Image (cartoon, rainbow, N blue to C red; front, side, top):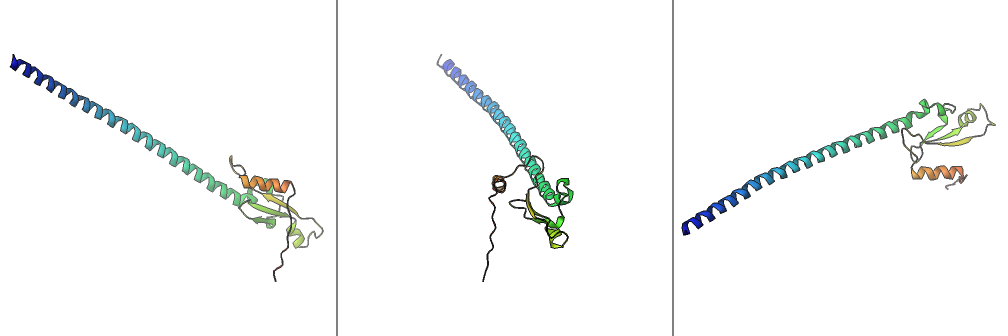
Length: 151
């Protein structure tokens, strides 16, 4: 009877060890499966982020090119002489001194000069906060002139 109990305990111990080994193999497979899914999600998110970054970069470049060529292409700006444009690109794209060329060339010496601030936007771009403040400043006529003499 003593031998039968020990045999039974050994068999039970072997079954328990076998169950642990099978559970370990199954659990390790599940962990690897979840790790692979997480890696796939990370790779997909990285690709999505790279595509978004590339799209944003392309849009910025397209916008910068549009800003530089706008005086030649935008119908809204065709009424102004190209020589009246002064490019800043930051914080606004252009300042137009309307009629400046005609006055300088003597064509219309009595003509008034109008100063126009121009910012070119493409797509869904909006004025930056600083540009909005500049626009409000101009609209509220908070513009002044200073002549500084250096000796």
